[in-house]
Amino acid sequence: MKIAKNTVVSVAYKLSDAQGNLIEESDEPMVYLHGGYDGTFPKIEEELDGREPGFQTQIQLAPQDAFGEYDPELVKVEPRDRFPEPLEVGMQFEGTPEEGDEDLDTMIYTVTDVAEDKVVLDGNHPLAGMALRFALTVKEVREATEDEIEHEHAHGADGLEVLDGDDEDDDLDPKSGPTLH
Image (cartoon, rainbow, N blue to C red):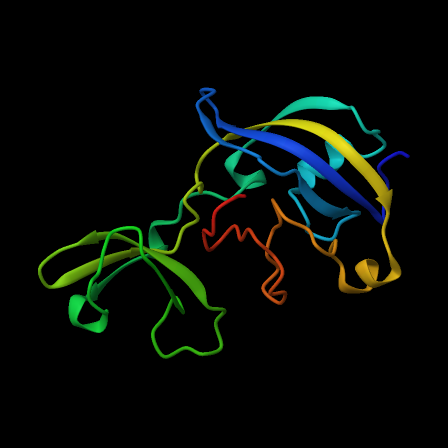
């Protein structure tokens, strides 16, 4: 079966930076609903469209086609007393870009530095600003169920999914930084 709109695609991947340094290799294939449902990056969908199981390719994505450019406006310095103890670099917290503005979407902020009285938080995805290389191998292709099409994602999907802000099943948010898996 060929990859087309409303098919569920299983793809093994290796993710590297532009210099070829391995960032992550999938233990389990990523699974997504093909056809513009934001299940993976549009350039990857474009590359896989019409392909069949066994197809292999490498694709490089510029930052704007992956997790976006690094935005220094998403770095915040907050008083340390607003955070629980123990507090460590790498911890993540949910919040809005502007304090008190509940109309804005919440974001995940990662602690990047802890000082005596201040905490530096970064709302950029950890891979923002990076060109990324994907080595992809199509493992399986099947027709999506009506339920999957209605919910606009593959059920039981694990792997590289781009958050759209309204689905708790999504795993990877270009703005927030949960890890690839």
